[in-house]
Length: 256
Image (cartoon, rainbow, N blue to C red):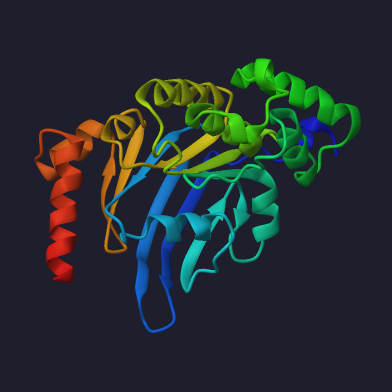
């Protein structure tokens, strides 16, 4: 097959149709989720704790099988092709997942090997990637001695060393100082400009406003979707923070 005859990558990075997840005991975590995320988009998934964000991400990563509905990620079905999805995505959470007793370079080498990179191609990719993320000067430093901001930068590098088509970020900057968060988001947009699709959850509303589009979940339901201005108009609120607080109060009242 020639390059000209290869199928074009899907225009949409994520498509869900009626996606539903029910856990044992009857708890409905996600209910009839219809969502489309464009390739190369920086997309925010927001909502109070327990709204279904993490469950949605785990289904899209091929880690949880949906109870009903369908979803595709980077052109692959989450129910039938989860391994193909996991090979083409990166994932980063607020939980520290690096190896403290390995250096910056050794952490990157480990993750690159896990993702199937070997030999000269791996070494070249790591060198180029450390430069692009801005951690080359710390390549010999033990990960455990890095500050919070540098650890997050290294974690981002490890999650993207294999050049994934899509990157999932689950509250990646929790506990990181404002300057480090600003640098982190610069790296996010550099990745997006290179064609990587980004899905991010955050409780920092200034970060939410940096997303090109937002989806708000409440008790497993999608209740708002659009740009920042469209979301503000939909909920008739002055700021995204006010939208979030209103939803949190609504959910807490429903539980009570």
